[in-house]
Length: 199
Image (cartoon, rainbow, N blue to C red; front, side, top):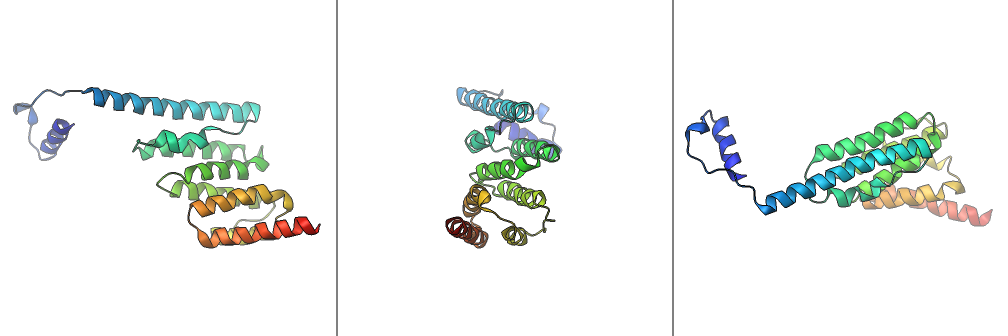
């Protein structure tokens, strides 16, 4: 790898490295093992995504791969691969939103919850935002752009049937260290428990 980097540096400096004496490239067992692990993880991610989408569309089975993404991405520093997988789910969810609107908030929130385990929390935040906005649209509310305002708007239409969703939303916000928003959602959960006991 060092030889390749040196050649690239020479090339970028305008020096023809073909005239220089260099050692031949050597692939070690460690390099081969890394490549194999990388290919196995890539194949698992792509194959899992294809299987998830097939079973979601044709058999109404929620995706399983999102729970495995953090483990499969461990040791892979390839944001493009992750972007491809997450964008793929998002595109399918958006395509299914007219056909199965009731599923979208939960599916996007499950994906967000899984992505909270990744170092880059922006992936999870994007899916959480999409989930909350889908939840509001499902209830006939035009979602505000700001997540804090969107959560406030949720309070006016929340029911006891939404308790599972709000528990998952609270968990996601806590994992993303959005304390203020997690506190707002916790308040909604307390209201739901109080309302359920009083009813």
